Length: 444
Image (cartoon, rainbow, N blue to C red; front, top):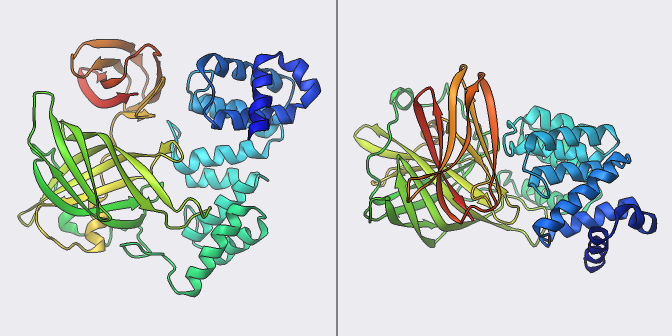
């Protein structure tokens, strides 16, 4: 790691064409990759790295072209843009980079940023790649049935042929669990086949409309349900408790306790318009399967929970769509849903599956919290007059107008870049033909 950092420092400090002759372009790309992931770049160095990778890309270096896509994806030395990252990965793949094809598949696998989640496209790009992690993820998709029919034999074969440490570690766990008959490695799980099937869901639950809850105070108990990346299949569930105190001020400040796996996390939060925005709230969950022995637990920063309320047979249920971030990977967690009541009610798998069906938020933000760049994404059903603004939450004053224009129907993404913005809580407002949509966001 030290030698890579030293090479990267040399590359950043000197003219890249001179250094390239002495070190070699591939070594430069590798050293820059390690340096970036070490988190050692300041703003000035980030721009130099971007120019360096752009220059090597123009010279025809495929791996530099792939790294350029990563810089767009992470907003290093350039404004954050998943659309440009996707275009750059495609160009790098055409130049011969197997890692670029893998990177495209990974974008679609998890639906990062404003990229729509799509298992079929993920599989397509993984199959085009000779990068070992592409085969590793393809094996996972066959084992769990992500976008394909489950084929555990094929999954095991892919892992056995993939001579990397991650695949070796994962293969050992899958074989042991299958031999033990514990194919779903349940940790308070629902059934192994947890796919939502509307034909089996409760007709009564489907017929009951959800409303925004007017109050969230009190002690709630129920389940945290983790979904697959498409949001269509239940992976597992955990018993969870949520207690919310009285609203302390006009801003909606409340104190919360979240209890899971015998651990209680206390946090301040903001309660507004059916959404609980959390500060410094974190939970840890054991991975179902790990690719590395040193990473068996993932830490999730809990960002917000958007609640709706349902009344079934006189029992009030809070259904919360949870947004989280996996701290070890600096990327969003999988879709998660909370099903809570104030009573001790046992629910069937079918009922829980029905409760997980929720409306998508009109505004999607990435990342949240953000440091420099923020992507604001939404979809218009028709041509509309649109104004997108950022407001200070506590002062209510407008900080910046992102756009004010007449836009065509379809998906739209705006990038907010404001390095001078102070840390704190903000409101993103999207006004569409006079109707206002709002979402809170944290600036670090």
